[in-house]
Image (cartoon, rainbow, N blue to C red; front, side):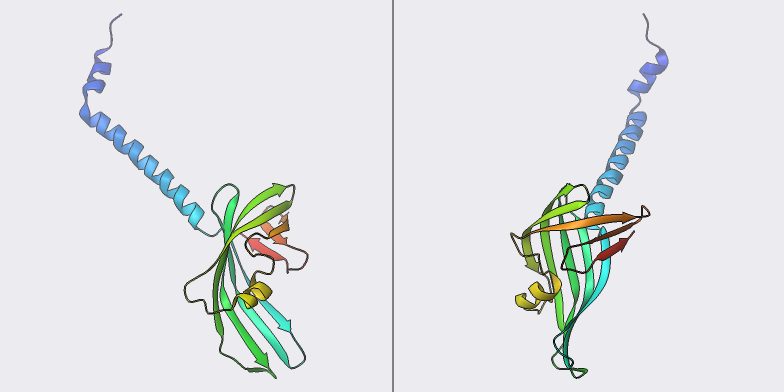
Length: 174
């Protein structure tokens, strides 16, 4: 059986192999960039303002944005960037405190429940907050080693709501 001359011509053509190699390389670069950037982009973000009313005359306002990130199949992290303000009689009584914190976690799904084990807690650039305030107002159940169970709900196939018994429900729309 004889081989076709056109097959031999294409095998010996360096321009054809250069074209195929460049195409494969470009395709691999696009896929690689997509894989690396999707894990670095926030999967969900939601602003939240939280008032802790101590008395009729005194309260604490924490306001900022939570962002969730997927770091792997069962790992992720949650960052918070915001401020903490203390008021008495409607007047600011201390300088506004900038907050920049993050927690890393491992998670397991069981139906609509997500069991989260916190692996690390860290302070970000510019953070001036106290750990006690963060534990009370920003991440109440999210210290290293803590385990929390969060219920997840999907509304209309687009809106994701989550939360625990003692923390306000969060809603993410993508």
